[in-house]
Length: 223
Image 1 (cartoon, rainbow, N blue to C red):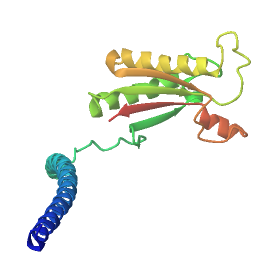
Image 2: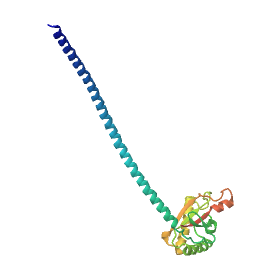
Image 3: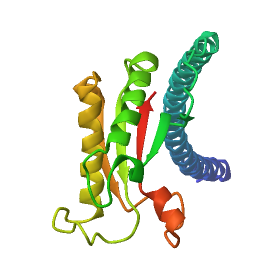
């Protein structure tokens, strides 16, 4: 074999080895590029998913804002309407009556309306209630009338056979007033009798004067 031939064969072998080495390197690089491509595809999918979520949240927020705007506009319209409403003119409170948060009220001492421990109206009590009934029919013809009966804190002794307790006595006194008002022309459907018993004191129960104030009937004309 000539020296030239041997050299040519060696050159071919070297070139072949070089080509083989290049192919291996290219394969490695292609494999790495494929991994990067797959990673990018996964990243892209995550980004698209996050973008869709953001779009949905944005739409929800826009809908919520629209709803709040509608509520605000409704509230503004209601406020404007209320500002244009003229306050209702109420009749002046009659002499002897008191204006309260619930309505007009007149307070009567139980000692004027009833005998001690009793629920039968006295002559003086009936006269006073006729005046009150006339006032109600003229000034408050369409109003609900509530009659509250109150007692002091002393237990019932002389008439304990008639009443179970102070609540029972106060209820019967309120009903006696309601019956008379009804007989004087006030509609039954507008009358209410409420027994309060020994509660809602307006004075201490330690003195005679205080107990006298606590024994009372309140007639309230509801607004």
